[in-house]
Image 1 (cartoon, rainbow, N blue to C red):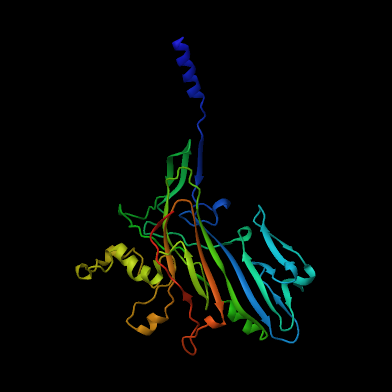
Image 2 (image 1 turned 90 degrees about the vertical axis):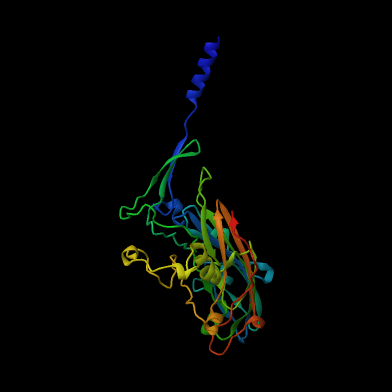
Length: 359
């Protein structure tokens, strides 16, 4: 009887299916599913919700055309003037317009604004049509020497494929530091209208910007990504505030203090000697750019140049799955500040303090 029971359990164990799977990591193979991830598996999706107040100072009506990248809703007459888009499974955005006669002209989308009328328009980039940021790849002196494919059995990693750079000779090729993987995009809402029309003016605007950072799916939850991310969008001339989560440091602090201290550069310059030319021949030359392509400020003792350099928040994340960065923006005529004649408007960024984040 005991032998029969033991034999039964052995047969049951052998009958348990082995679930094996494998997938190619993003950035190493142009597969459709991960085409918007960078080479450490990060994708950035941007959404914006903005209320803009406009006035038509002309004695005749104006038709204001809208960038169809944004959904919009006109806050008047029962809010029945609106358009929104939905991205289908093929990645194509389908737009739905509530009132074609009121919100189209010459096949362009927009809205009419009556003589001397003030109107509030809501502009949105939503989850349905989120803007995908072009995130930079992580770069190192190791070239492409990284994991490119993983094989799972019953949810656990059993082996993987590692790309080998045959041109490298040394056993140690680099030391890691968190690189910034994006460059802020500057949006200047208030400057375009005066260039194309002298009657339609923006009185004020305010809204919320949200950046969702998504890490590539990891069945074993063993692979984390460490990187820096900057403010995704800067609205020229506007106030930026209420950052959630708190930022880790500013761009100036990152460039002038964090990177140098983290990498041990120029901490004890008197102890450092210039290495032989043969040891540095194959290394990156020093330029005014980060490895991610972001221009860095030239260090100078000139107070005027330092004061004019635009500083903005940087977050350092140790990311497992997802994290959201959210902040508010606002602008009105009273907040418009010119530093001096001929200079650009000041960008107001209200900063608070945060810490290193593991997410």
